Image (cartoon, rainbow, N blue to C red; front, side, top):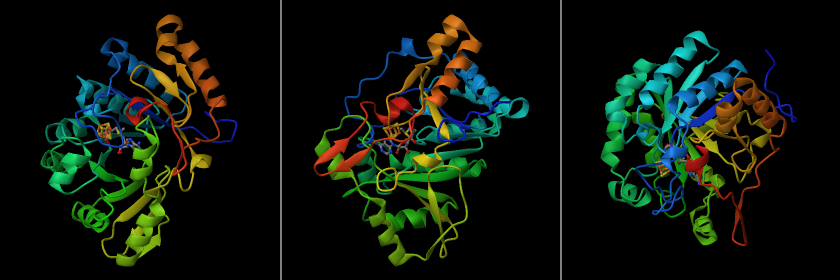
Length: 331
Ligand code: SAM
Ligand code: SF4
């Protein structure tokens, strides 16, 4: 099988599939309170999403992340996870994972595990009930904690993702490390990316370079660079006191595009070859009108045209952003 290799010799083996752009939370860095969602009629059906994924796995995609918006809000998403789980038996798929805010996980963890889900990245930007409500615009921390516990109880491996936010969670960094240790899971800090127009002042106010996070953590924990590689952009450190790994994803302060191995498919069947650029390919329309071979050809074209890097920047005097929110492209 011909591998998907782009013009910068990057092997594309990882697809992120968004199944909805909708969400029950409104994280302050992700989407505005009055977010306008895509019309439901424009979404790919779950059968179509599956068909598209199957084409990717036939082209050598080995890892699939189901995401959104909040993927667990998509009606019948479990059906899709079951089909994708079966692809691990029969097709080339090796890893089936998800990113979720965990609000629905208390009831979904068991069937997700049975369907073949390997692991979940869970977003958690505050461990304080009131602050969590503020940062998510109304979210309920207890619901999320119950979801995390259900995942652990059902044997789904989890990782906690924290978007580092100036003035929001920068005083609670050690609490996150301790929390991850109690759940025996790794934790990753992420720099906020300028995706979607939130106003330049908001972005500048939110942005906390992870160098500052690292410097703080180094004072309180013994961190040594880890040999572990997740295949993604995170750079990991082993934490001697807790035995967990702490990851740092630094799209702005230290661009990781040279190792990029992924592309993204939106809930409306548009393929984005870069999170931070506008190149898009309407695979759903091609599937409906021209069929599998035409989709395959378009995927090859997208890989050839995959941009070298994003152009994100957040500075006092300059913000370079995409016009799409992260929840549209699929985080
Ligand atoms: N709703 C799910 C969740 O929150 O995990 C999945 C979708 S969410 C868009 C995926 C990830 O993107 C989350 O970890 C979230 O924190 C992150 N994210 C969203 N907007 C972001 C931004 N502007 N910069 C950095 N990370 C962002
Ligand atoms: Fe929803 Fe996830 Fe965006 Fe928060 S980060 S608003 S949970 S999609």
